[in-house]
Figure 1 (cartoon, rainbow, N blue to C red):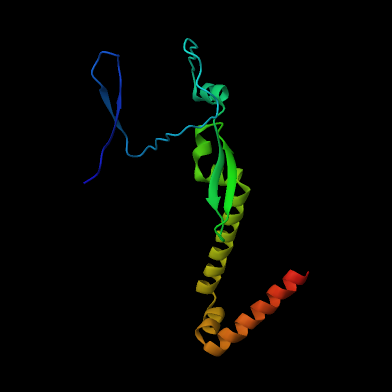
Figure 2: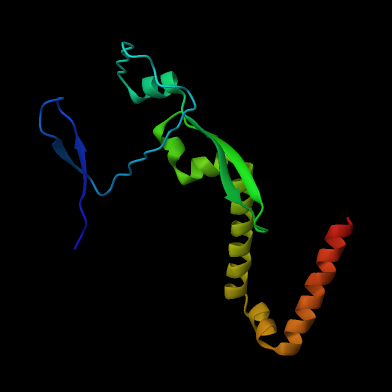
Length: 148
């Protein structure tokens, strides 16, 4: 059975809470995306488009902490200029750390595909003696690359 997500909003100070159903194919982000203090009461901002909202508030998230492969903290800052900036691809594009991780994952996937498709290479891995030779060849190649 699918779960329904319900968001309530106050329609009036004395009115009963209104209830709206949040579609399951949508994502709701709730976080403090700016370090600015709230606007003063009386300031009325009436945006006409989402671009107006992003231009006014210039949301960003600073010091988002991630852990690298060794468990060391890595901090990144993210700026949001449109709804699409919340997408995984855009977040990766903004982050040098995440870009590096994505490049590594893509490389590993390419190697995996080669192992799946290349019959000669697959046979070399299946044979213990062939595996030893392949590993030693790869280690020699790695040391050569590190020296140059």
